[in-house]
Image (cartoon, rainbow, N blue to C red; front, side, top):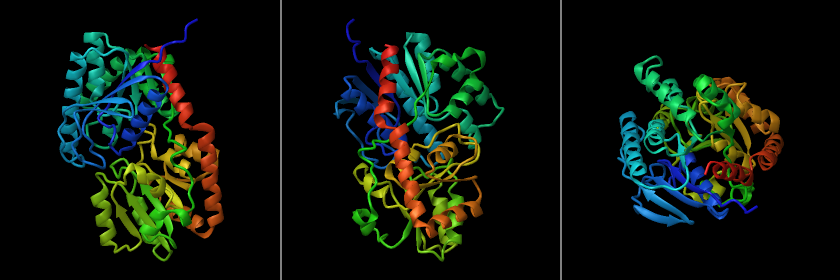
Length: 409
């Protein structure tokens, strides 16, 4: 029997190289990995909005990936109106491009921007275009939880109907965790075939992000962190992250030789900076997104790294920073609800502590325990790295994507 031909892959997302968002980095890494496995990979994206704001070539080849950058407005993504308009213009450009291009192979359409559910539905009806839906966030539920749309309004009802139609017509649906799968199946009702759902966790390149002693880390020296206990939050400082609780914990730990370091940008950054100034906190610092080549150093400047989700968000999304923290070999403290994926991973791996969102006392206690017991801090970091290698390796995830995409050619 002849060996099946490697699939052609068409990735559609507003986040891709050189965008520094978690989604952008995951999709870029996925594309490169599939290309090295023999796939012909095309990416339909726009200009970066996280990290660099430079205009990129309209068409380029990067690491063997053929990138087509479509028109999208480049307004401030931290304002509600700017973010919506950016997403609407990209959705319109992507839909027009897909309707007018002859694309061999299925589309891998990501849930960013949120309106892409409508594009999947239209493309299937008009062109019978086969597609795999990659769910990074469950919409419109996430928009309701964050207060963008009314829970019982017309927009919610129409959006849910389009989602059910687009999910029921998908050749496959990829979700990032079991709780997300359960939510999607419950929303879909009888029209959704559970057999089309595939749980594939995100990952990080464990050869690129590796544990590094702080004594050998030039990022630590450059930022004067040598003698500090560093609590790190790295990534999107957005509305779905419970970061106010982190600032309040920092206020209670001012007497410690500790630094709370925020690296990134997002809709809550100005609020956190204001909270820091109002409380005159000297132990809180902010840095912008770091270039990709700096990540192996910035992620390992920490003693403890944080995941922080608002109540009601978990299951609607899965924090990609979790995997980078595990790879870096740092102890993890997570503001997450019990009964969901992140708390379960922490318990299974023995790699850290979970605290209910909004629990300032609990977070302060968890960080204080690690501050007082550095051996436990290092031990839990090693356990996290071991768990990543056993369960969330890059090779394992790439093979799962390759097999699914090949099966729907």
